[in-house]
Image (cartoon, rainbow, N blue to C red; front, side, top):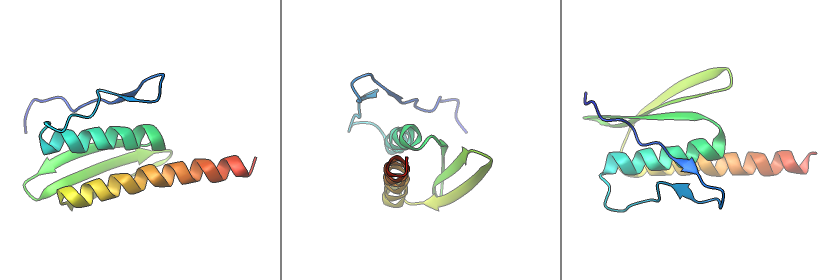
Length: 98
């Protein structure tokens, strides 16, 4: 365990994210940034835990929570992209039903 603080991502008024993505970040910070974007898009709380076996996710929202992992770096990105896209599709469908 380290004393480092996880990266916090926020959405700016123009729709961009702060901090802006930086391709020089270490992999854990990149995954935390992707998780931050997925959290904003989905409304879920997503915490990233790195272990010697890969990346784990602690996800909570609404009435429940779940944990997933371990995942490789590429699987972690694919999972977070799926969360983000799923949230967008859900919002689109809910908007159609109003």
